[in-house]
Length: 169
Image (cartoon, rainbow, N blue to C red):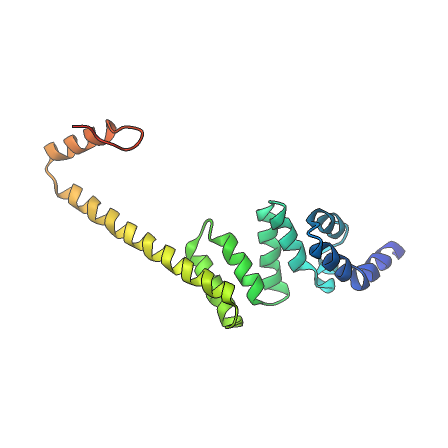
């Protein structure tokens, strides 16, 4: 149809400049309003998926932004910026996936200091998490070794703790 051809040409020749312009102005709502008028394939061909993902994130729609970053990796190839930004989103729910993405960001651009800092930070978080897991497992094993009387006493103390997790004896 003529409308589709017009949209396709607009996406190809105008959309990249417009999204870049609005991105510089930090007008993320205009970017989203504009790109939502096009099909995914047109956005892919116009190479505006990154700006779209970034705009969704800036407007608080992390789910949609994350899905666009994943689509970039799937359909447009990897970049340090995409891996790094996706790593930041994954960090909220999956530290190990975030670590993989930050590692990949550094591999793709060894000069990317932001990705390097993010990788170092996530490694530290994972190390602390592993230490907490080990401490929990040790405590659980010690509890299991106690006799029934001591187990009941410990459970009672735990149940009677304050809101601040303090136990008064």
